[in-house]
Every structure is written in structure tokens, then in C-alpha cells.
Image (cartoon, rainbow, N blue to C red; front, side, top):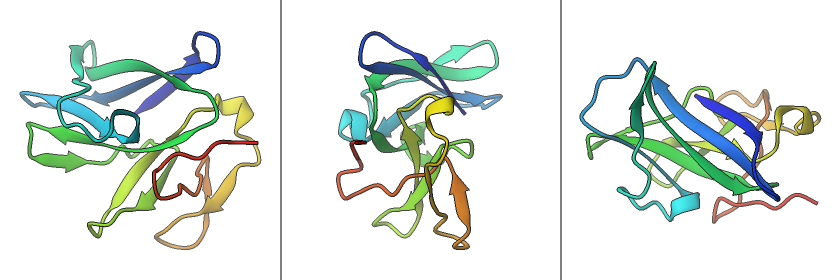
Length: 130
């Protein structure tokens, strides 16, 4: 699950969380940390696992959760999803606040229907706005 709030100048504070999930360790891995498996460990929190990080405003990043070092999970509350080179999909976080995302629309990879809050993400997974 994602939550977003204004961060320091030029950033959005994004909280990544997996509620009610049992595991020894969970990491969020993505373009924002060069897909380094151990770079961003989630901590146990009131409703499961969570981590907060500040990311630059106006970008889109691919990411996934790595559970116990071997199991990859998507965030089913992400801003969008894009196909990856392994035959699956990556979750996408867009570093705009919800009220700034009105009118941002692309098609879902599954059914060709509009995906709210989704962006097409280019090769490196980062797209600058405007």
C-alpha cells in the first residue's frame, strides 16, 4: 500500500507498507535504489510492515517487494503497473500527490482499459513531468 504526503522541498514522502503480512524480512526494491535487494528494509509497524522515504517530485519509479530474500510481490495499491522483462509486472509509484494526478492516464497492460494514476514508465523506470 502507498501513502504520500508533501516532503521537504522538491520531494514527496512515500510510505510503502504491507499490512498483516508474516515474514522474516521484507524490502522494497526498485529504480529509486537501483534494485539493490537489501537497500530498503521495511520495519514491523502497527498493521504489518512499512518504510517511508522521500523521493523527488514528478517522477515515476518501478518497484516490488522482496519477501525473505526470495519471493517477489507487487503492491496491489500502486499507482500503476508496467510489464517487466521477466514476464511479470512491476508496481509503479508516481511522486505526485493525489490532487496533482488528475488527468494522468494510460492503459493497463492487462486489459487495455484506462488505469487511474498510472504512467507509462520508460526503460530506466523514471519519467520527469513537464
